[in-house]
Image (cartoon, rainbow, N blue to C red; front, side, top):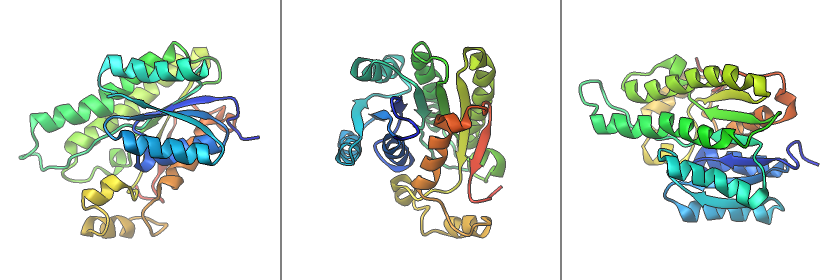
Length: 248
């Protein structure tokens, strides 16, 4: 019997990368999972297939977390399919890096809409269904402490996520709903590879600044999310777990 048996989880942005790893890990511990995607239905369906092939329960749900109706629809899928909601993982995120002289308003809007507004809208939709013992996990980033050059907009979004995490931990604590953040370092994902991060000088520098001497894998984040979602973390709320191999 898994740590999350009988629980229902929504994972946003779960068609690939960190989100896919989280969805699979939650399901492996017994949770029924809603695998959200914004554009890649095929990717989400592949994650669902992998979960069900391993004996787990999962369905996919399309939707843009930056749109209130879509965020509500994602949560509605959990309630309509499984009848409850216990775990929300706000993982959806986008990033673009540019020097301060070159960033655009469109880049700002895209990143803040998905990374910040998306967290608020999905949480707003979910919270009415969350009861005592529920867990919200916001995926932030190590950039909030490392603050690399050219990431002013992206780092700003994740700084907002860290602040929102603290606020909601206090706001929802009286209802016995826990809210925590996990802040990954550099992780090998499809997005990091397509952005040219993996195999670049940036990756080499990141490894040189990481005491454990490597970049991370989605499973490194997923196992920490399982912990935060489970009763093992019942005394943790408002925390920010930096999962970066020691990079600070």
